[in-house]
Picture 1: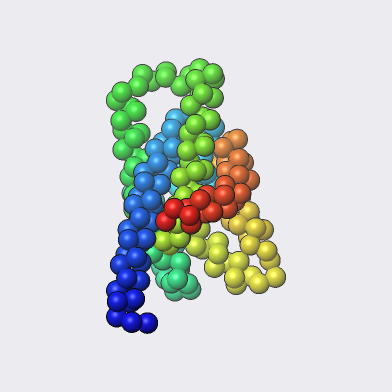
Picture 2: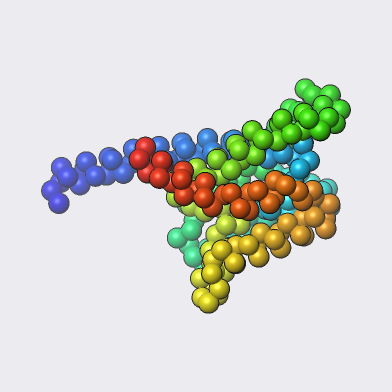
Length: 215
């Protein structure tokens, strides 16, 4: 490869990574917004958020702060067993999502009346776009491949260690365990939790095809 070709390749690599990083930051922002809305309508959230919402409420600290602590603990395991899972996307997810949820929760507490989501009709109206936004933004985040969230990375590591157990089984048990613990600690486990478990995989595949064409 000539010097010119190496320079062109390097510049293309930088531009592509910059696009992917911007995509990750946008996805993380909308993930936080979606989770905050799903908490409001009280139909459940994704298993990881359910777990962390339950633990943070029992500890009496903010969701965002506990997310950072929880993800930092898991990140140590990921660092020890599979550093290839770690990237800029890992840091963006573990640090930003929880605090974005806290921010929008703070905003909604001040702008919306306390009974804003008492009506079942309003809750369903808010639920549908919020759930779609969460699934789509999470799919974009994963499809960009700039690192896995520590929660997701641990599932990949477990699947690799348990060679005879299919990944989908490992992931299902991992998510169910998180959801059950979250439910026992007071989080709502509902239709959202179930839909995310079944819908996220196919959406990731579809989004990944689109992302690879654009980025």
